[in-house]
Amino acid sequence: MEHRLPFYLIVFYLVILSSTARSELIISSVEKRVDLHSHLVRVISFLKVENQGPNDVSEFLLAFPDAQVKNLATMLATYSEEGERIYSEFPINSTKPKSKPSDMTFYPVTLPRKLKKGKTVGLDVLVVFTNFLKPLPKEITQAESQLLVYTDNIFYTSPYYIKNQSIVFRLPGRIESYSKYPEMRLVESELRYGPFEEKPPFSYSPVVVHFENNNSFAIASNFVQEIEISHWGNVQITEQYTLIHGGARLKNGFSRIDYQARPSMSGASSFRTLVARLPPRAHSVYYRDDLGNISTSHLRGDSQGTQLEMELRFPMFGGWKITFSIGYSLPLHDFLFESDAGNKVLNITFGCPIEEILVENQIVRVVLPQGSKDITVKSLFPTNQSQELKYSHLDIVGRPVVVLEKDNVVPEHKIYFQVYIYYKFNNIFLLGKAMMLVLGIFLLFLMCILYMHTDLAL
Image (cartoon, rainbow, N blue to C red; front, side):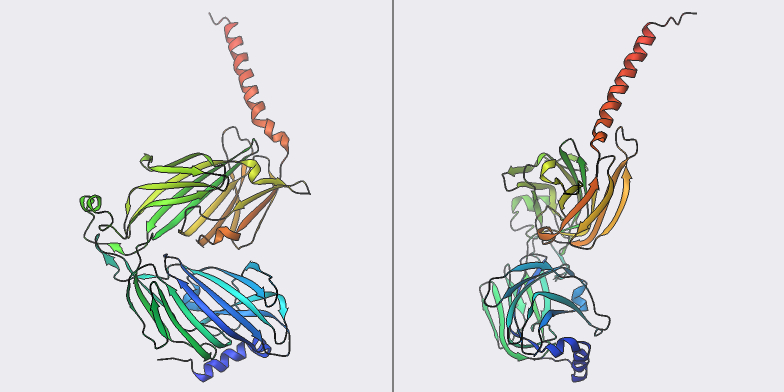
């Protein structure tokens, strides 16, 4: 049965959004596709937006309930204008209007071109949610499969009138149960609802899907990446991981005998292999945990990138935790450039190299050479930024360290989240340690000569 917000609340919404209402935007069609193959929920909405008002429009509002906003990791919109193939990808800033309904958050999308009267544009909006799927049951035995629950609005949540809409769920396996509607069909691994015609703003009706998903539920509660820059031509990267299995917790203990005898049936919800995609020309790669080096890994590389397949020391079940580290070196000329103003420009990609992993807290420490100054950081996304000093061998004044911190990092962040670090560096500092070594060796020989030619007898 369809549920709608009370009439007075809809009127309140429209008053708050009066500038948008005057533009008389409508959504002529929208198809919402929900991908549930991973523990990261990816929602892609294909919208056709039409301007039926007399004025040009330069902004479109996306609306999300506050209960979903806390799980929203990233959002990306692709714009295309009718009649022309103009595509542009841009991140959407997480901003809220000063006045808003108590349970709704709005995200303004600035259109690259103003939408004229009677014209239509296409907007493809990708949203990634974290910690959105709930295990049901919360605890399972080693032999059981993991079942998850997803709850959503069957209608597209929007402050605009919608002519035609539908929603599609892409599922990884068996479906335990799902909400029943007349406009519904199940085809293999896709559950489709709609089309629904002529729906007013903020229409709502719940939909619940209970399904099997044994894919990797890898969550890095902490990920610390240290990038050390050497102007002698090398970039040394060290990564520390605290990894947990965020799915249904294991009950009644673990049997190694059952796991080795029937790994596909006993331990279906566990994972033991992770894949990290490192930059091209990565070398001197190592992989170790608290007990030492782990030899069960494979490294493959080509001109497009380097793939590190890591096998954990033991299988990971729900609620289990492990810590490990990987390290590798990269050629400096792939990441360091010089600007027209003579500054050094370091271009790094912010994100985690391990595939399909959620990073709850990521810290990136960029260690610049001793003598670097006038440091500025430019990024396409908000981070907590700070600077500190690090002292290493033969350092006198210390190395500047740029610290970037961000929560809720997902694989999509690596696509467009670049960080540019500008700094000045005098090449005379390259000779500092060499001169200190030469001076130290000279003093050592001088002391030996003095010792050999000194008579210490009384």
